[in-house]
Image 1 (cartoon, rainbow, N blue to C red):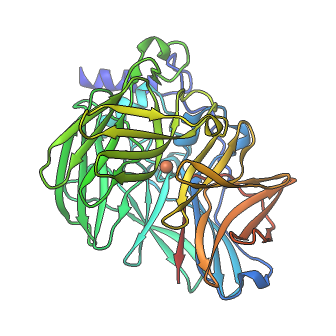
Image 2 (image 1 turned 135 degrees about the vertical axis):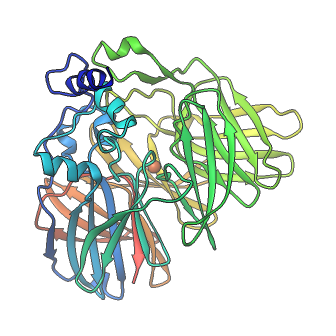
Amino acid sequence: MYVNIFLVLFLLGTTHSFVPNFFRNTKPFYKEDNNIDLTNNKMFDKINGFYGLVGPNVDFRNVTSLFELFTGNGVIQGVFIDNGEMTFTNHIINTERYKFEKKFGRKILINLGTLILNTFNLMPISTGTANTALCNFKNRTLALYETDQPYRINVDFYNKIISTLEKIKIKGVSSFSGHTKIKTNTIETTSYNILKKKIDFITLDENLNVLSKQSLKTKYIPVIHDFLSDDNYFVVFDSPLEFDVKRLFQTSFPVFLNHNKPTYIHILNKHTGETETFSIDEGVYTFHFSKFIDEKDQFVIQSTQVDELDFTNLNFHSTLREVRINKKTKKAENKKIPLLEKISMDFPLKINDKQTLFSLVEHKKGFVGFAICENMKVIKKIKLKDTVIVGEAQIITHLNTPHLICFTKKNDKNYVMLMNLKTLSSETVPIPINITNGFHSIFIRK
Ligand SMILES: [Fe+2]
């Protein structure tokens, strides 16, 4: 009988299945890894390190939904900088899914059938794509995806190449968040369980041994992307993500954000393990937190929020807002600044204790510039003429001044850009092949 059930599931997972396939764009952007020497540029002199951007190996121009982006196999695009000498490289991460697809010569489609097969370990994790973020500690670099274990990546400064070493199995940890935090001597990550509506906050040592695990229960489906952590608290937003089975049969992804239901804010005390829960009276989803301030009378949480989240399209308006929680009355308020409501921005990067840099997002164009904010005030807007930034930038200190480094596209030509954040002067170095957009990035100093 079980054989029959699995046969049915395999049929559901084929191209001719009546159940909609969520992943339509099956053509990869890169077919192979590349290594290309770039021309030297004086502005990059005295920089030694690697800027790497990870994202799905798909052509963003052909993509029609967020789901396609989240489920594309990971590719790292990066630049080795060796005292001004630069080498561009890209590496398709050798995930279990990628290996399976290479072996059988066909794509794994992502639909109800393959997702269930995946739960029974009959197929490699179809959504474990290592495409979200990179982290580095103790000379170890990991490629992360929030519902999977991390992949260890070799960043080879001598030969200027990147390769996949292995998928790391961490004892007692089922998955490793894309927003894993590297602290002074520890690593903090989260793992969520949709069926049990539970989030685990896991603290590990630098050799990836679990030091502690603290949990909290959520009201909704606990798909959390980012979390906050200081010396005393873990903080998450519990957003009204709902499952609508009807959507499955309307060729739609069944999970959506219900804006009419409250959002809960859970604050877990690391010392006592107790969780306090507060609420705001609207459904919002936060991809990224930018600041947490524990004041005498209140908690202040700054984050980018969306009011609408539908994984079947690319509509994305993310604004910077501030949740204030009164410690006495336990009342929470979601503070919106009219000027900020008009600006779509995300991917916060800390410049210093006062200032944060955000990427400006424009519908159908992508990242068109940057905004520098001091708390809830935009103090500088940097728009780049006819240029899009193809993923998260990184901030590096160069000649005692903060600079940003990122990949850009201008009139279909591709570049790596370095910008002085004080003078806003910038230089670009051409990349002679086409590059694709990514999500999060990293800068590793040599
Ligand atoms: Fe993220």
